Amino acid sequence: MKPKKKEKKQTMLEVAHEMAKGLRKAELIDAIAMQEFDELCFSSVENVSSTKAKPTCTKKT
Image (cartoon, rainbow, N blue to C red):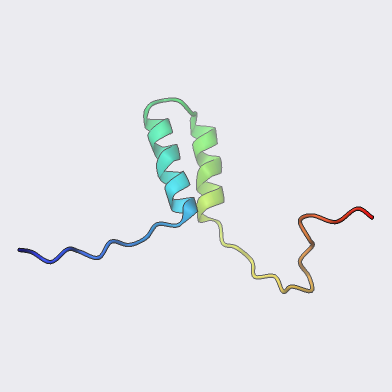
């Protein structure tokens, strides 16, 4: 019996990009939308310290 190959886990952005490629191939999204997926999935993410980051939600008091 052959040993199983260790599969690389995909990130959520990689999975989203694969789905977008399928939608593009099926002509369900246009080239502009595919370009936007490319930019989203392959753009670098800037590291932001916790003191610079803004909270995503705030409590109303």
